[in-house]
Image (tube, rainbow, N blue to C red; front, side, top):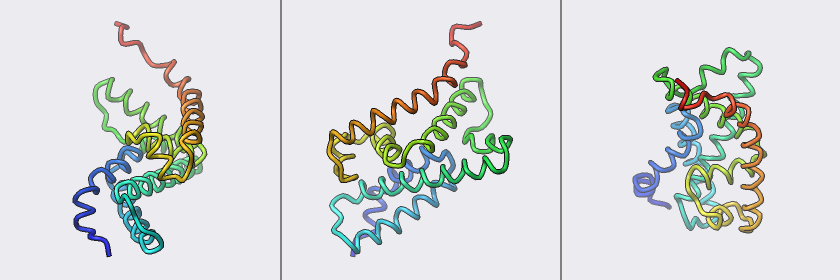
Length: 173
């Protein structure tokens, strides 16, 4: 039986940050964190866990992406006015508002990626995992991870290009 107290004190904050970074909401991050812990416990009954942090981060990222997809599916049915509730940032200076809007656009773009691309992108770009670490966790070759990340970046660049082109210049008066 794993020592959950030690695992959570050592790896818990990083895993929670993974969920929060994707969701931008503490309550949703808390729920994803709990779901990831339950899923990791279930997985540990089926196989030996070599790296608890990696397993928990991967599960938190996957659950956060699922939650984001559900959030945007629901928002589409409720209407465009409800998307503002998901921005995840308080109104503030123009830079803060712009950053919050860009973060929300990135979250939306991530939900439109194929699940494996989104997971690889989140683990590598947001959590700082190496290609080899992502490959090991996802059961893929390093080359396949490179292809997934290339495709994810290309799609994100295309989806965010329109938003980035409309940003005011920092040099504008």
